[in-house]
Length: 273
Image 1: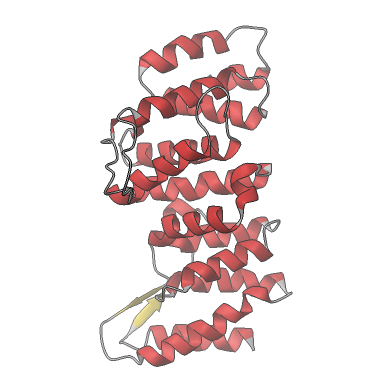
Image 2 (image 1 turned 90 degrees about the horizontal axis):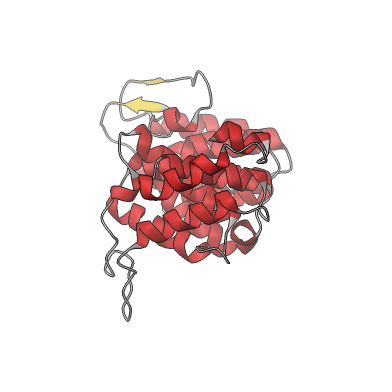
């Protein structure tokens, strides 16, 4: 039944004209996120029919068969309704320990990466408070998609989220460092540098009665310094912080990275430096 629904969805999606369905060669999210499975020629199509198919397919997010959920995650790349974000959220809830399903979600998010991340952190506070190693890696990959997209309002809101998740020596956050690392890497892939982005405005952050710090990038860089030097955070978090500092001003990176090469530091820290 699930297969028939998916087939009908793709047939309907391509009914605007002749189309070709591209089979992904791999599941690299940064390569596939913006490539639709169906490339179609404009024409008439029943929007109501597609909406019904999307609704029916979204209901499969709770299916006990991981293969069904995997194919749904890939099919959701073609969803157009606002409810698609919630479909992704339900897939992650159900398959949080399924690496293949999470990779399929990453491949399908596209321009919904920021709304999805916001919904994930808001609805599942443990992802922000104490993510597992796999969850932190997933957060990093989602933030990378946002960095690659580099849409000003989204990058402003993501940096504000990172700031509020944990900055400063007393509040080093694994989730914040995973997000900052992915964001930095995504921007670097597009030849952009994260700390050179303009400071977010209150309007971009939808703040009505306060202003964001005028030195937000510096505060985030300081958080990376604290994480890189801390022996109380996971090795993953320290390595991520070192990667961020590699894309940060010398005033932050140089003073720390040299010290990280000392022989008394763990091998992983030295190698990341």
